[in-house]
Length: 465
Image (tube, rainbow, N blue to C red; front, side, top):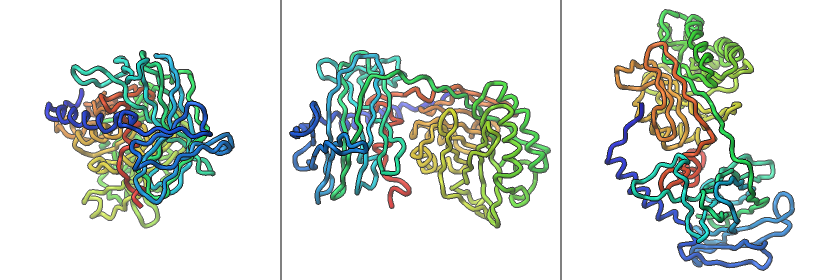
């Protein structure tokens, strides 16, 4: 069951796509100024789109974290300078290649936007290579599936400030070369970056990274206490395990729902009785469970969801950041962090109910690396859940109490295009979707938006400080 997009939306999206394609066309086509440093390695060139915004380029033979060389781009007292080092590497279509480098920057407020690498596929005539239609490409009617630049992701940063930038890609079938760019753009005065340990080599293809995501559509009745409610969920956890689930998401404040208790009476410490109870179930069934509950921390009470894992312990917790008036009026405290939790299949973030009405929580979780967002929710417009999935290219797993007949929020799994892959549409039911976290979705003109949006999204949250 999918979310249908109107013709108006589709037309607007195509118009937007053409505009973005024009803005993001390979910069070489914009009359870039080329220069070669006397000491730069063979094949590497320094490029700027216009001479008036050209930064300073240099190559340091003893630079980089290993002392084996660094490509430097430095701004002067002017702001807004743009330039990149570039080199073309021969490739064979259909084979896989890995780009890897490290970068360290100074005086760059938002490195994810201003310090980036790009990989541009070209055919034997230097034209954009054609993307294979079998690669889950979203096409424009009548338009050929032209490849778009790849944006390798930022990875971990070491103690010396060097951030790994890397990814593995399958070259389009007719690709003959890959143009690698090491960029610094939109710099404040005196912004600077060093690029080191740069490599582009053939590598094994990325293997599938399959995960089975489960939602439980169940409102607890008759439990009367947090302990009673916990016991009511056991059969549903067992059913999710029977369906070989890796991650199971339960409904919001499940230890409070239907008990008739106040938030204060239902509140407990986290970790505490509920995380221990569901931790034991997670260990027994070798899976992860998102456990939403009411948390007490001293005099403060939070709407919280904990993640427990197959080791039987709590991995972490998220405190709901955006609170509706009903929770504000009852003295619930908002959280202020967006933690993302590593699991054996990938990175998981959590947002809770009212969080879904705002773009910021999901965006912050995605910026922090979330690939799957668990979404315990009493009620929400389902289009908002789809939007959070689309704009961040993450999987969203919702678990609600809402009756499907209300045409309101559903318990389901949304993919990167906001399509509803599965839905638990009956009370007490469990729905499971198997997804591949390594499978890329390429949009017409935008390409792999999961990687690209990070390079274009305006500064948010702490980045503005």
